[in-house]
Picture 1 (cartoon, rainbow, N blue to C red):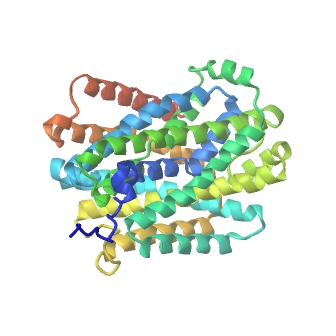
Picture 2 (cartoon, helix red, strand yellow; picture 1 turned 60 degrees about the vertical axis):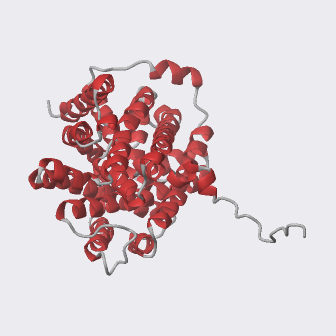
Picture 3 (cartoon, rainbow, N blue to C red; picture 1 turned 30 degrees about the vertical axis):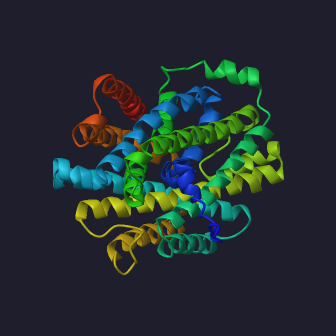
Length: 418
């Protein structure tokens, strides 16, 4: 008898198995989308208004610096399987771990004030009071995390964050003078203290403590392994380029419009920026597109910074901490996240003038860099397997890059006091 052919077709390999990048894709993109938060948007806008294109080159130079820093979190998360706070505790003891968690808490509090001020600002552009927008935003952020696994939260964050791409449309509509853009971006008034202060703010807007905690913990929670390392680095590299292109787009739009026509305009809030852009970009781009970009940036950053603190405190204190756990089994983890979200919304609702702290929060992040990057580099030197440990010429590259970044951030941040 002829051999019977089975009617059952062989199963096709899952998409993630055929394209490993899909399985890994997420933590790097999410943390970078969150990096361009409301405080960063205000900082980039003020950079463009006050200095034209003179801070544009810095946005490009920060791409590799951001990658170098966040790649270390990828390496630590994959090859140790531990989050940042847990690794600091096991390597240096609980005292240092609580110090790092305190820095994280301060940075997260500052971030949440800027994110919810952005949400309130977008609502007020359309006449919706913050008494409505803030509770709605808080409820949505709670629902995203409490009702989903890590992968669902990650997908939701990416979808929300994609609204930031609206800023590319804003930059295009601004019609910048390319000759002036190239010429001015190479003219750097390095001796000016006001310029250095915004250099510090831009550095602090790019490298934030909660980004480091989030990406390392997310990789550990996602259970990425050595086989995912290459793809995870690409995930981070793509995110680093995208986030800085968004920052550059905002700076270009502000420099091409507000800086030329109304250089004395106040840009302390999202509403200020939108109103200043509207006469030059039109009602639709100036309000709708800009508002969508801000809303996407604010919500994804609120998710990431709150989760970073929930993970970080859990790693230091030892409570259960995973989005894969049911809320009743990881009560403290979800409680910290909820307190961050609800507390941030409540404070901005009760004290609306806090939005003027936007640039100051980024400068504070820059002042925290020596502590944050010091822990990160030391962990990469002592806790990784020998084959992946930070050493040799690359160690010197990292030390020099991070040393210069810290020095510029701290000096620029303190320059206004000198």
